[in-house]
Image (cartoon, rainbow, N blue to C red; front, side):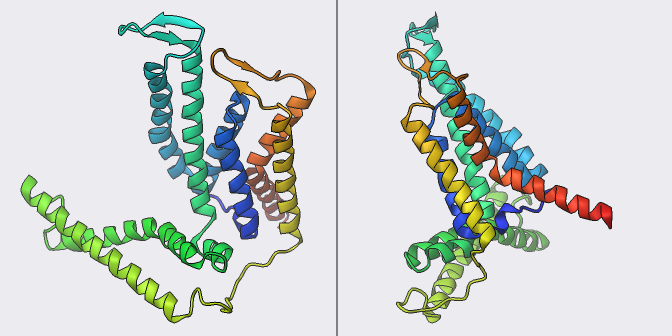
Length: 299
């Protein structure tokens, strides 16, 4: 079961700044400790947001994808100085290619997890709020795209149930009849999606969306709590960027594996800052959950 997310209640600027930083750092830093921290934080937050549904998806789909991507790289990448053995094709299997494959797989899965969390936290109304005045057309497209998948899924279920009642579901009849029914359902869905997009565009146009000088109602207010959270996120991000420039996260895979010393106090401190940034939503949620439990126990 999904939990109530405290971090989603913060101002959209705070949410957006956090995801920009964690996604950028997850793709740029190949240090194994950074990759592990990002993967753990993204996995934990996704499970907190969507509960057992996210846990099943992560284990059934992302874990096999992680393993497959890690094994695929050594089959095609033969760089590296540490040769472990030779493949039947005669190409060398190197330690560096295996390590790099694992790192690339971790980056791929971590980014997918972060974007799944982004899709849950940054809703369509937040997209319109953030970019509606700067890039109104693009913000409208993004908000419609974020809403499209869940609405498409819900509408597909409605249409499938209606077609099943008249014996025209994709599970009825032989293979040819099932294919014909499936094509009919797909045609209905495409028509619905196009009509819905046109209606939304016409509705926003009639309301003057995107016109200069247009005002808009907003339920978001930037208060002291948001200011503290944004300052914390930006300070962590600045510290990580400075640490990266100083070589705290340096790590290479080719031609030999070599990285910055992990156990030196400055680098340990930078790794803790990196983990603290990634774990920010989970820390806020755990703190809020404990507060609610304490209030409930007193009542």
